[in-house]
Length: 287
Image: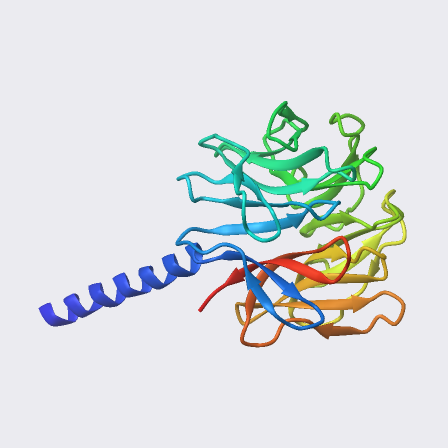
């Protein structure tokens, strides 16, 4: 009996170790679309996540728990000159560059709720844009900087909303009574891509910035999420989860045909296109 109890404890501890290692082993990497080469930018025991390229291609923003709390960082595309932007015990993540690269949107989670905040690209002049008991986040700018689109569960489930960059004039865009999140503007500002679970599983959709012409792009039984537009606006990059494993896919908006980007031996998560359209910066899970 004692042996069985000890074995159960050992198995439990090993399982917890596996879960911990999976949770903390993500890194930032660049994937070359032409050569299929993966270039690792960070290498540590912490969780480096949610990278996004600056509009001019000179910097990458990401979030990491390397300092003990989840904060926003930026670095050059070769992994050098890492700079910490936020210094707070709260969780700060999901950074998004403004079209001119001068501002950053991000999520601020103090434990009770999550809100959308804005700051300068050097971490200064922080401004709170949303303030309510719900979870507001996953925000993105319109290309001209006049609008901010975000997701919120203020109605009970996550829906897509749009507002001015000062937090005023909030308008709800989706009304599906299921989770809708990860909204992102097209390069010309005429469309918003997002993922929705309205059909039973997460699929990629697009709609107009006023919420009209909502159209489903992916059609399968998998979990498709985290869309990102190509710089020319003709393709959408997204993550597909199958049996707990993520891979990157691209869907062409003219043919509505999709193809896998990353090979099966590379585990990746959220990703973002480079401004020249030749590379992808991604959240990478090394073996």
